[in-house]
Image (cartoon, rainbow, N blue to C red; front, side):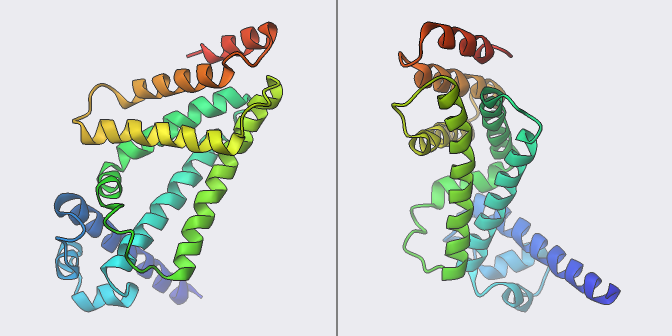
Length: 222
């Protein structure tokens, strides 16, 4: 059993080394200009070792994407686990996601610059399904928080799933501006901007005066 555990740990360490090397090179050179041979040299492994774990560069990229998505979604859930107030959950969610993009700037740069170039590439169906399942689960998690706010404030106009997509779009484009446009200002300050836009946009004119006042008091908290 110990030998098996050690073997599995070694396997995971090699995969992590390969992921880290690929991320650095993809970010520096772009996906198309990076070769498996270069990734192997960067990771300090033989080329054959790379192929033990990945069929090719495309699978390596998509599995890296999957690992980043899983970890990011898990980090959000962990950060929100002890928070009861749905508005504070949204505030913390925005902060956590932006800080995650900041901490993983290299990968985010790859994702934003290469995503359209990779759309035509073949992906293993099992991996594709897992990526979609992870993404939909994350959307469902966010939409449930939004639904809590809507029920509390008697908002019936909006679709919480649609609002979840809008919120993620705001976060992603803000991160894109921060990463790709030479980091104007603090990404933490950007979290406050997104929250305020989200809060006031969601509230609109669709709550009664007392509800709006009570929720606004929470929305203004730092």
